[in-house]
Image: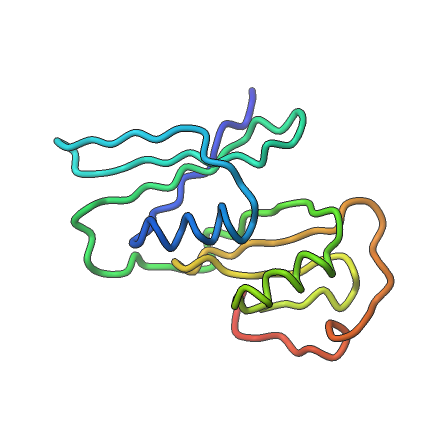
Length: 141
């Protein structure tokens, strides 16, 4: 058995792509539009060696209301080379760090549609540092 992808429904495809591609650095691997079904599927990948898993963004053209969200979904998780630098870049891009990397190991942010995204430090945790050590949690993740 091989893990293929996680599907996320999004209301604003452009906002979702800014988050996943521009902010997180994923790459669009393919796209499929269905005029009859009135939807667009966009597949994203990390591009990392031996990482074949993808995220499928499903954009239903006629969806006006927000999709119900809940913690039952859990989260997406990405390994990063430098948790402090990654969070600083995301903060600079206007993203909220819901759970800062106070421990030098783990942080949480959210996509524009409210999907929880965990960022984990590759290898050993980095030494705790400011501003993360003093930064409080914000909302839920």
